[in-house]
Length: 169
Image (cartoon, rainbow, N blue to C red; front, side, top):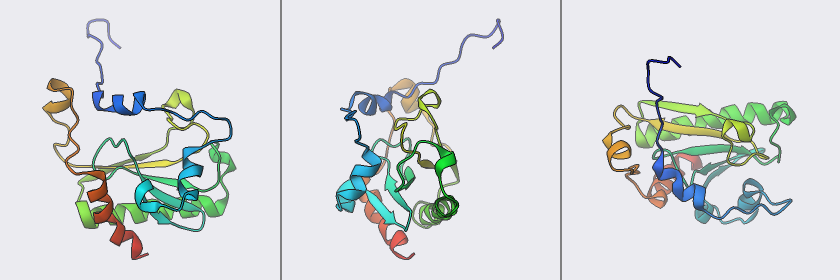
């Protein structure tokens, strides 16, 4: 950072709901293991189950259609993922992009992982890939001026829109 430039800040005030939400830190408990074992995919926003991988909507999205590709295998270490899991994860990332393209027509994507607490991982012990659809102009004045992030569609409506695309597989 140059001395003659003020520090720039990134504001994400819509994330406070997630930050303040109750976290289950019970040893041996993991949201990414617990949710698929409940067999209530609609309630838990699970769109797809593969052999090794599943797709879940982010309950605290950065944007409409924010999906996560999650291995059933409980690990926070990418080096512990098998070749089969690795291949299926990337195939399912492609499936997610096709489903989002067909239903929401984004102009691009942010796709990635946060591995470890220092990288920003909210769930440290169970890796997952974030797929965030992006549109030209999806960053506007609302977060800056109004401390509000506009998610323009209810999660259950987005779920119902995307589900048929995943059922085609």
